[in-house]
Length: 303
Image (cartoon, helix red, strand yellow):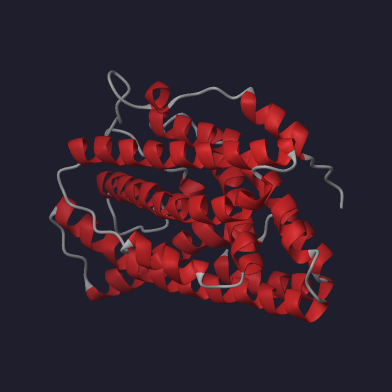
């Protein structure tokens, strides 16, 4: 593989990152509801020509709330999975154990981060925004798959955060600075997590036969299908929140266009941006070149 990750180096980088949740939100650090929260490349609200500029901004903010919720759900699923993987090493190899324990600690911090941003959102956004769940049921379903399927799914999602941060950097200055800061600081730690998860994928696959690995990779597609159905439902919730917040009822034609375009936007945000990431595909290709090709063929559906 082109990357050269090791537990000592990853741990060292993680220990040099020292931001706190309180540095990003709370006190005088509040959300500015006069600005959009999400990069347009993720929100894709500008393509909805039937919405006014104000309605597009409101929808962008609703999508921001969805982002906080989705990653809160994901982080809560990651913590027990990584803890189970790390447990055998806690009294063994020092750098591996410490790196995974740091991973878990940072994911717990991220859960706190997303919850605090959700609290600030609710203070400034008068309309309730429904979300899919319960989170425990979503996590239970995903974690019921083979560990390699889960580890690869987590890896795919972790690489999405790099693209999310990069897209925010291309913003023209209109984004809320606190939300932009969230995307930046989240990626600062997820970069190490993606590297550790790559090592975890390798460790899990090392004791598996080729046919078992291919079956587990198919499990990633099954999880992706499950997540996609959740995203379709969430898109409907986002539509409902937009109508409540703006007091405008969309026509049947407008609703159909909204659902098609915003479902695709959600697909890209949470699945496609990781599924097409070169580092994820490289890891996949090392496990099974044939499966990498299959993933590349299905990827346009999520872009």
